[in-house]
Image (tube, rainbow, N blue to C red):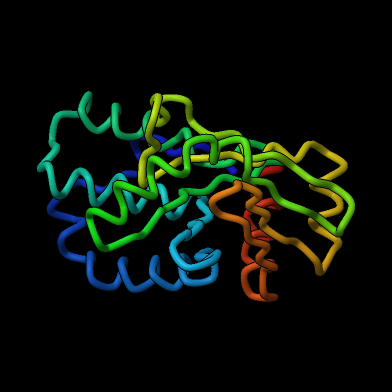
Length: 195
């Protein structure tokens, strides 16, 4: 999967003309890459399309016309475009009540050591969190993470029908198996990352 280039990003006026249909297409792409785990954790598995959409939307909201500003957004979001034999995700901790959310974000300190993917009941791959989003005493409600599979685990992922997300934090313990649509979408992304 190639990284996003400045030429991949449409000028604002062009994007505005096709935004509605573009968004509908991306919502379909995201639908099979959204995995709810437990009551308040959502994994959004990312690829080049989802990140390109994020850049287009950010440029639109901030009215970015300066090529250097757009380039900065591309560099930022390219971090979540998967490298070969890798799966990336945004992890959202979705708790609507502000007081409950503040409490839970303190309770979940250490979550970065408690998220993994179990592939074919054989390969357990620990998620790597972005250290910039972790502070002492509290975690962020949005995290960017990578699952560096390596060649053998990636090969197993492509040939299995069993992949689970594991959360083993004392305050938050879940197992969630990917459904066939989710698994197929992520296999497509994994294959594309090897190109």
